[in-house]
Amino acid sequence: MGSFVQFWKQPQRVWARKALFQIHLWTGIGAGLYVLLISLSGSAVVFRQDIFRVYESPVILVEAVGERMNSDQIRDAAERVYPGYQATQVYEFPDEPRRAVEIRLEKGNWTRNRLFDPYTGADLGGSVPWLITATAWFYDLHVELFGGRLGRQINAAGGALWAVLALTGIVVWWQGIQNWKRGFVIRMKSGWKRFNWDLHSSLGFWTLLFTLMWGVTGIFAAIPDPFRNAVDYFEPLQRIDNPAPPSGQRGAGGVAQSQDPGANPQPPAGQRGRRGGGRGRRPQFKPRVGDQILRGAYALHFGNFAGMKLKVLWAILGLTPTALFVTGLLMWINRKVRRLPRLS
Image (tube, rainbow, N blue to C red; front, side, top):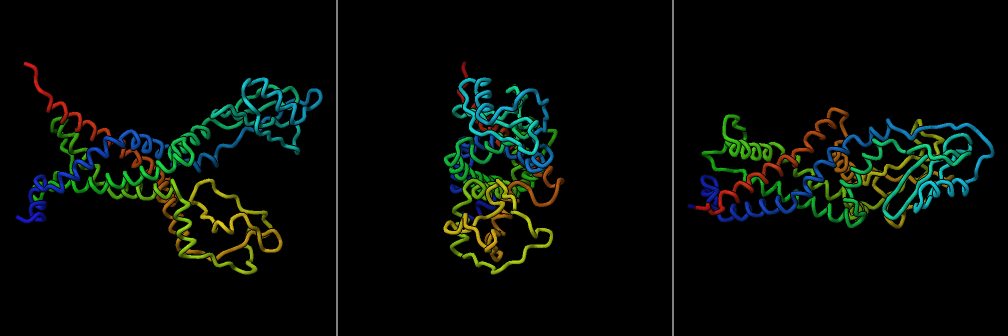
């Protein structure tokens, strides 16, 4: 019996399938904690742009009592309230001198963003709503693993492992032509071990494309620069001479840049940061297919392309890897316990 025919009828006896099963098993176990963290944090940050738009820093007007302190005096007052911290940034509002001043305080890896009374130096509370702080925390975990550039590189490797799990999983899922229907459904009346197996198998099959997509696009979301450089190489920028500003944007001072990598693909390294147009206007370039692909990949990864209903779906589906890890771990534990010698 040929290998293909044997895999079609009895895949459990094919050596290649056994090898891929071991790769799938140990990749899942080894990267389990990573998958768990990325899955949970990914679902948590799906709505981050909506949260950032809705919640803003509070505007607090204080009573003008006595003489208003200057920036250095406010900085000294903040450092007295938080010993050991250094006030690295002070945000004042010249148009409204009674408005509370925002101060960023740093101590090693710890950061505090606080509001202070510019007349008395009193601490008035946090300058960033807790929901924004929590969302930013989850985003930093999801994209950088709190490790900056190194964290992004680890995330890129994690995205590749995620894709390997998806591809090897579909091979392991196949149980032969006579039992192929087993991988689609969950038998509710079976024992917990069979139920756990069915849940893992069916979830893995029905969410295969999503899992594979998140793995591949996650590589770009983690390290976008190599992909941008590839676009620059294959599609050099072509500048548009004397571009007319789009309707509704004439006279605007500029366009706010998204902090999400991939939301606004950058020009080549040699042209980044240059201004042009003769009147302080940013230079305009012809659209490129590569930029559209990169923007689409980033939007696809986070679900930012079809409204709130799709974001809700993305948040729910984002928890699937967590369920796959838990059910897979239970199957592994059951196999280990079953192989333990019985004490007489």
